[in-house]
Length: 183
Image 1: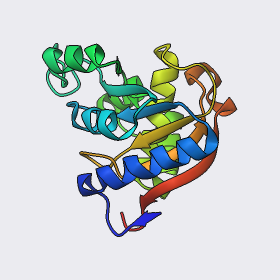
Image 2: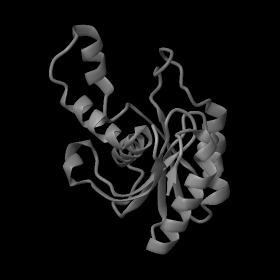
Image 3: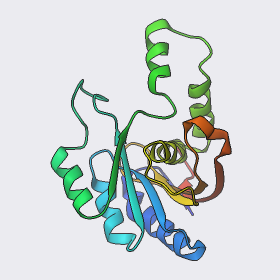
């Protein structure tokens, strides 16, 4: 499925398509980007019976020592069965900080991120949160549905065989369920 444009207005359709494909494939884990909790709450409504992992920014992403997802939201999601992982971006992290401080040069992880962005921001985020969830110990190693977005909300879903940062090239992007056509 292709959306005419990226954005949070695609969240419901993305999660519905992801859930439908998960049922068809027998996949029971979904990993999604959710900075403030909205996408995770939507997944709770749509993705009944799935193990949901919400990945949010690391503490200090926008303001030093402050989490983007409010603690009460995190606790509420966890009380509803959502695993919440706060982690450094797997496809930028410290490398972006070095680039910002010292300027140009070869930045392999950022090259990987920009290569994935050829498919759009949402697919890149879906890959990235699957790495972060793997590194956070939230996944079993079976195929997952990974959901990302372009800014707020969700607009992309992929079927992925996950892998963590130490074995990232063992990851397999098996299917693109949906994504924006224009981005």
